Image (cartoon, rainbow, N blue to C red; front, side, top):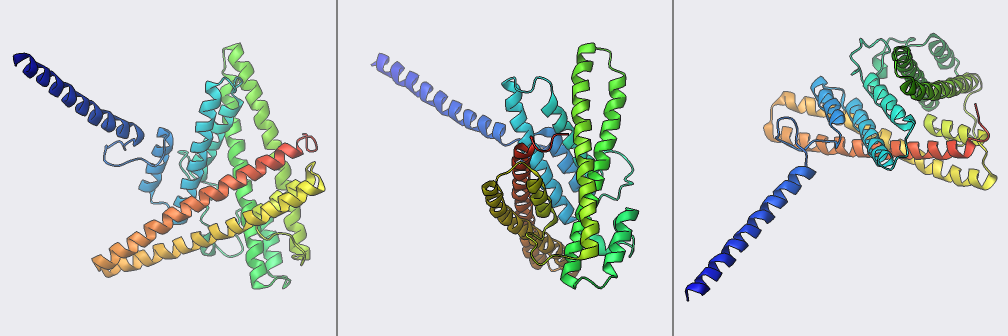
Length: 353
């Protein structure tokens, strides 16, 4: 009898231990998979600490809603690329550090683009295109050549209201490309300054390779800028062609790249169909951005009235729309990244520097 009691007691202890371990294990797994903010209160947005720091700073800065959504999409793309790179590095596939250097450069571009690089912002970097109407008339693109060309086109009488909106998007896209080029130039200058102070010869060889790659990338960007400006000049003088394949600047740029690349007729036809789908995605994303801006204006109006129930409903709608806009922005940018990569790979033999 005493022996049975001992066995039952031992069995009970084992069962309690198993339950405790299971509970603790579940709690531990959840905590590992749901990282917390520095205050430990809520799950973070990103799986990489530095990206969370940038996002938290953006919230404190109270960036405009559209700009904040754009930043979120850019950080999601950066997160995806960094996690992929970590896998490559673990497999020993980035020995010369080329991909790591590009990731670092992309991160610096994000910081500068949203005014988080600790510098006084002299580039007028604002991706919220909906605010452009607040700029001083006649000087909206922060570039004398662009402003002169825009004013000439606007006053020429060749364009309808709808065509002027399309043309303005083209100019805005070119302005953003100039800004990105300036950011890359700036980061390259700083990298070269650091490179001068390298003592380790082996480390110096690696950095020399990275610098060469950056210079090559810079040359390609300059070439694209020149081609883009020439296209704008032609468009401003001749107007839109009725048989234009696409309307959106990013899509037009990809199509121009594809036509210069080493692609067969079948590949071009296939790509044209994919670009049509992509253009629909870009237009949908722009629609969401416009709705988000309007929703934010409505929220401010409702908050001023002070009806708590109405405020809560409007906040919920705004929050839902902001999440959809971020998600749509990420999908659009990932698709753009994939298309650019596909065209570049096929066009390497044809477009060597």
